[in-house]
Image (cartoon, rainbow, N blue to C red; front, side, top):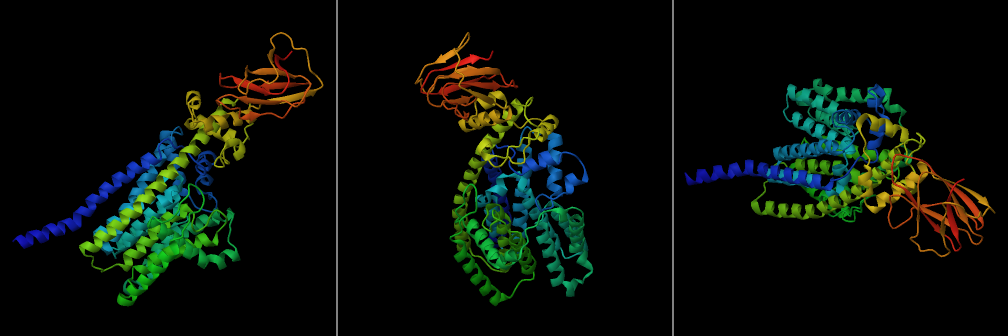
Amino acid sequence: MATDRLARLMAWQRRNVPVLLLGVALVLAAAALAKAQWDVTFFQDTWAFLLDRQDFSADAFLKPHNEHIVVIPVAITKVLLEVFGMTSNTPEQVAMGLSLLAAAVLLFVYVRRRTNPWLALMAASLMLFLGAAWPILLWPFENEFTLPIVFGLAMLLFLDREDGRGDAWACAMLVLAVLSGSLGISFVLAAAVDVFVKRRTRGWRRAYVFLVPGLVYLAWYAGWGNEAETHLTLENVLNSPVYVMEGFASALSSLAGLSKTPASGPASIDFGAPLLVALLVAAGFRIRQRGVPAGFWPVAAAAVSYWLLAAFNFIPGREATATRYVYAGAIFVLLIAAELLRGVRWNRNALLVAGGVVLVAIVPNIGYMKTGGEWEREQSVFTRADLTALEISRRTVDPGYALSDPEVAGTASLGVVSAGKYFEAADRWGSAAYSLEELEAAPPVGRHYADVVLSRVLPLSTAVRPGEFGSGGEGCVTQPAGSAPDSEVELRPGLHRIEVAPGADAVFKLRRFATGEYPVVTEPSPGGSTTLLRVPRDEAPNPWYLHVEASQLARLCPAQ
């Protein structure tokens, strides 16, 4: 009796404790994502969805982003905008978080069906806290990666049913995967391999599982996708084997917490190559002992095709070690590992060692997530401050003005934002900018670039009249030679006359929201000249402040 009770208890533990701990991991991951994304707004390519696809035409849904199909991501953005508006990025973050949690749960189920449930818990936990892939975890736009993975994993699980209903659901999941992003093509290939491997036992009638989603993609490509720029070159094809190996190495080093992941740019994979060699040796030994499981071929096909397609379309910035490619690569590595570990018995000590390794790997990955969140918050400061500058200058800014110059905007992530399109979206869904009060309390770097953008979009303008040094007049403010570096004069909207006595060139510096600095610098004005400075009227009551940097007397006077 006691033996039976102990056996039942151990069986219950094997079945349920990993599931309960998965629930804990999901809650902790959700909390970590919320903390890392706190006070983060819309970023980079998201603006292409927000501003360039505002209507509900076929083109808005079906035109490619770069060369990728993004029908479902666009649809999600549109639904969230209609329901919640554009004042906060939180709804998109929640939607992205749900896809990440769903992917982890589906991965858990997939691995548990093939091996130990504790290993399934470890695999899911690694993905939940894969900070080396922080752009995927923290940037909702990257659901073009997570959604195909969610639908692709669901497809693989439906194929496990080995029946007609499972095949039908698998086909439906593949259609959704393809409509979510180009990564769906890799799962279509996985389904094709599954049909081929099982053709003798289940026949070719189930070929529709991959043919239907394949035809959906081809129809999209014929109508819209063929217009996208392609980067396929012979050089990329020849270099693809190296790229594929680097991709697998990058995924392995990231899973192990050994990838040196910067806030931007490709990661370092110093440990990736030896990890890949070790994995290949272990896989070869395993296959020699037990042969190749049938389920290995579909996931291996998906993994290799993923890296091959990325290699064929390589351009600088799309290196195999790029952080945005790590997430899918890591999923495929874990799927392959699960297949190769089918039937392997794990004793308690082996599981404890594996669990310890996973915990050690997660710690640096959480650090990478924190670093990525800090970088996105900094980008959000630039974004909100620059958009506030556009809103303040709305009555004078050129509608075609784009925040494409990083030296003006402070960031290269706003290149697709033009004033006219932004105002159209803001009028429809609400402002994503700071309020004036929020801008006044924003970090110094945000107020700095708000002043710079304002000087361009109002614009502030000067006209120099050499040889015209007047005699001042009523209302003039005189700045003696060698004034203090923080001496300044308040400027209100209108035309101002700045008189500089004969001598060296003078420099005029201005600020508005910035403090302790003058971000806006005009062209030098020669000694013995008068400069007319025009300050257009705008939507903010805050005055400008002028500092004259000159070795001689200068006067600020109202224009006559």
